[in-house]
Length: 553
Image (cartoon, rainbow, N blue to C red; front, side, top):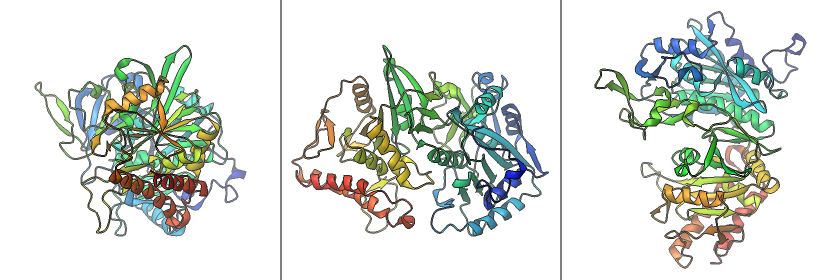
């Protein structure tokens, strides 16, 4: 087994690093006599369909039996109230400065005791879809939250005979217990008005309290799985990856990393007018081996926005569950969803693995290129980075521009970049771990590194057509890059309408400012969170070199 579920009696106790205060508290809740085990996706569907408030649409799940459901199963819709997105402010990670184990152990104990008179469900999934990386995760959640449980089973991999055999054959991860997540969406506490998402990542357990949104459960699970991957020789990736199968035994594996709205999923699933044979690994969660650069998907399904998918869109036939969408009757009196975010923002759906027709769980081929997707108006549509330090630190300072919807405090520069390292706000380990792993991929595994600006370049929108055209040129080996002005480790492609004017003083000033934003961010890590995310000196040196060179224009 990949992670450990059972222990010899002589190996149970404080001497075993798997057994800790909070983990033991959380796991114990799973064995109460008020807990019912849900062992199949079909059973979870029936419970969710009968749960109060569920809208059972009149649209059958497409090819239901192929994903483990009975034929005739319907797409289910369940809606939350005020909250319809993740709440970053509610996250607390044990191991970060200021997070006291005894304090949160008390909160967890009381929260679990508060479910004593509730019926609870316990179910299991596999996270990681290949023998090379596969872990077991458990969820305990109260009755009436069946839709969260059902979507969780769909999003990850519910156990069946085939999956169980794969898991039994998986690589054993030393000193790694199964993931345990306890959830009570109805919990409340005056000190945590937005809820509490508490994780103990070193011990693979979490409590999600007072939070109904399914995305909290998805990302909470991935948070722990990515932590396990990081400890066991993998780069944890919040991104998408695809393989271009070019014939004659040639292929090109591309990984794309970007924040919400950057085009990550669009690029991952783009068919390029069917001019290529394309295979998709996943568009949100995977890991890359630092040993052989192979990649493994963590999930079979897709948790996608419904905003851009009108009811009649063909992609909707792959929906299995919907969250925070409307419903109405069609001309035949059948219940159908109302998408396009009419009810609220961030309407979501779980789409089945069938949405991507050429899908695999592992790329044995090493990754060829990493693309950092950014919305930095000073960068042309594509930049090629040389030098492993610069390539990795640009991922560590992966940036986007502030939106006009944000309310800014006095003195905050509206043009300053917003940084999210490696596009992964769910990292629970030191940032230096990611920096080192991606640096190694570039330095030792010959992975190319690019930045794709998917926003605008000095006021001119970089269209999807431009971005996909760049990708095609790189994949086919037809791209031509040239040294960019004074920069020794940066090259750009000549693209009509997007040529940087290095004689424009205003442009140079903006470029320097945005690079200095990155320098400030890296420097701030020395003190932020007690230095938890401090980067090695060569990361800052690589950025400061770029800033210095920009002053030689």
